[in-house]
Length: 102
Image (cartoon, one colour):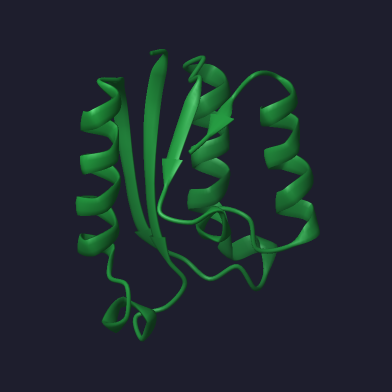
């Protein structure tokens, strides 16, 4: 398996009470372990998708994936990454370049 990045994200402190960052981390790490990846980095953050200015961690994930030639992103749900059409276009560009979303 190619290089992998895990992304654990909630959009608010209130959401952490539902499917918390810890729960996402546990699920994603278990999935990654089964796939025996070259796990390069784990991003874990709380960040709203409202104003694009608030999406610094999202931008950091995308930049990291490109710079480090990451082949796979593991997330609990794809909506943890994409919250609007602008995000969708950026993620679709990664997919078009060969990145697989799990």
